[in-house]
Length: 195
Ligand code: 5GP
Image (tube, rainbow, N blue to C red; front, side):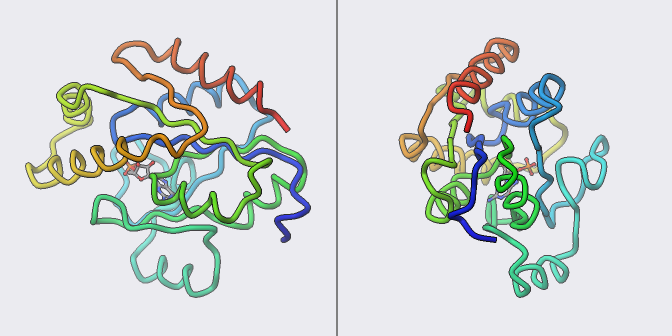
């Protein structure tokens, strides 16, 4: 695997918890069967609707640490000071070598790590912006019950992520109830940047 032989484009969707990244990616999946949407690995437990291997491979902390040791991850991070998340190196590099468009959501730490590893011509980053933090909190709460501590951790991460959003190539407003419009804008950006 060599970063010089990459022909495709890795599109990173960044933004705080509740900004709509997952929903936008699900919409893109329906429209673009030729794009690759790789699962990442996480130590967070699955939510009731989540299937192993779709968006995430769910694993124990021990297995995750073994993955770090064996160099499986392009990047990994501890997110919301709680669970580990890591993007898998091999499937992403092999899709990029084949010239594919690869779309993955990561947190801002993951984005910053990947930016230093993948050539700029093979990378596009899109930050989904939610300006209103009360609205963001309400959206996070809609996902299901959460402790005060968990909400406060997510809100702290959100403020930090938003303060670094200028590092991304594009910032797309993500207002409530506008998934079709947000998806169309993200899709437009990806198509205009295709390798
Ligand atoms: P959630 O637990 O809500 O699915 O995701 C929590 C956060 O982890 C989100 O900001 C999400 O974008 C981020 N995330 C998901 N996959 C990865 C990954 O592979 N690497 C990193 N660094 N962050 C990830």
